[in-house]
Image (cartoon, rainbow, N blue to C red; front, side, top):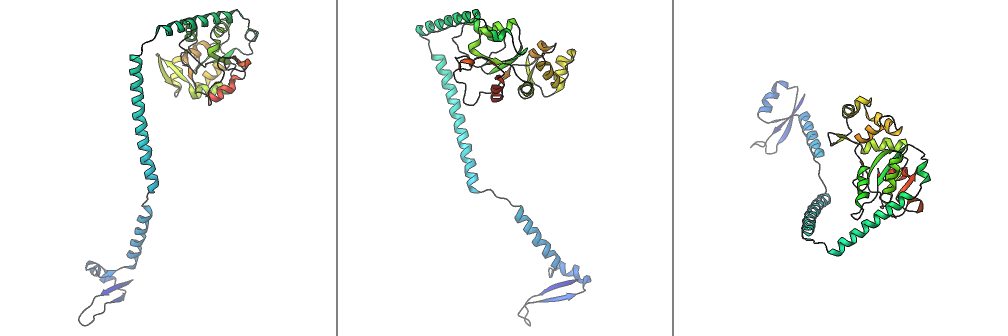
Length: 294
């Protein structure tokens, strides 16, 4: 082993120099204790550790830090503005007083809505008389405060309480009559197996003790529908898609699906689909709308 010994200045030797000593392992502890020994291996290790520490030190560019700070400030400002708007809207609602003309206008709209509903019920619909499938998927696409209470009651019977809520139903005479009553407010058609599966997997929630429970555990399904032989989410899909003997129980176990607003919105919602609008029977084309809203 080679050791470097630093020899400092002295009266006899003003210039310090290094002395190299070979094969002096017995002197190593003594020289280390007085700080006169520098081992080449320890110096190399020290340099390597320093380089590793330098590499480990990471930094974030100043522009990114400034952008983060700006984004946080904007988010806080938007949150404060939203709270102010909510507070102002609540205050306006409390202080707002309806004029008599508005009550008359709403009453007339509701009466017109009732007359239109009666006209729709008198019309014969051959496309619904012989449906292509037993399974229908109904989506509520609009809802106004001016609708007649009878129309609103029909929507509630179909479990369509909110705009863009949707349900699976089995086609029968009662359902066809309800659809004629609420046709301007809904669109419907025949969903394919792919969309049935994706809707239940993505948007499916179960009704457990009147609570909206996500279908993340098959135990939830087994506890609610186990007596009907339905034990997992695939059994739900099979029962809905094939309109099985326990379709009614499964359909009521599933909460109404809350779909997303389609990009670009819905245009011409007051017209029937066959006339270029959005409401009414779409038949198989309902699958295109489901893809946009799921």
